[in-house]
Length: 323
Ligand code: BTN
Image 1 (spheres, rainbow, N blue to C red):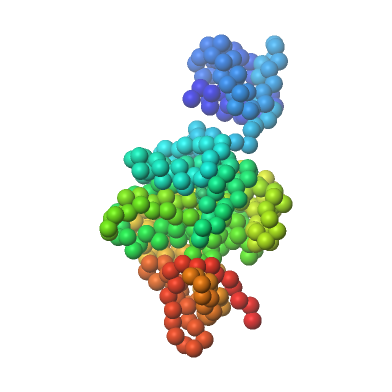
Image 2 (tube, rainbow, N blue to C red):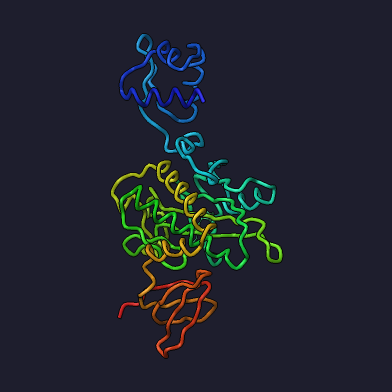
């Protein structure tokens, strides 16, 4: 706590030096304690100038996600009350599933700076270099099993809304839950679940957002369909601020969803770019082409085929067909 206070005071004084005595007085600890916390901040990667007779000033900050900073001003009801951060992990989804089985609280968030075995939809890999956001949220909704797929749609609503607010770019949702900017994917969501008969034990909502990554690290086929917030805005994004916004939006839309999933679906429809488009959707082996007409109450896509019949699709990959 004192470390965080010292950090905030140093940040507020910008380039001006602050003496150890002043810092000690401001937070009510001894000068020795101030010095100890400064040493700890340096260990965390902060660049701090320490000049005898002048004091301390902050010159650089590490680009790392930190628990206390994320929690500052978060004010959520459920999401992010407990946060675990790993510098490197196989997959935040896998870790969150383990924690959920060990009775972790609903709303627990598992974050990693990088993943060595990041998982994507339909058994794909999720390439996870440093500079992005990779996190998973443990949820324990008391809903019937058939409503579970709506959790991923809810996640997409939260991420698209948060990106619009925090980065001022036009993020849209492609069914079921990809978030795109200018036609390219900027975020993917992967939900995993543990259930028995008709009862959900827990759901893990995994979110990967391409924030400040260098797109050149991606293989060409993936790169062509991918964008990052950095390349869309030409600005390095503050990942902490963005993550906080996403957690806040998740907290909000999760409550909306629990209260009335139709309200959440309305928000999804307002943010989506699939409905009304001619699409091709590939699922288990076959490809359907037609007009995306809407989503049903369980989030399945309703497609009107050229022969006039209607099909409902629960999972698959959508491409927009231009004629
Ligand atoms: C997709 O294929 O679009 C889904 C990608 C989901 C990636 C995220 S990154 C955090 C979480 N951990 C994982 O292993 N996957 C999800």
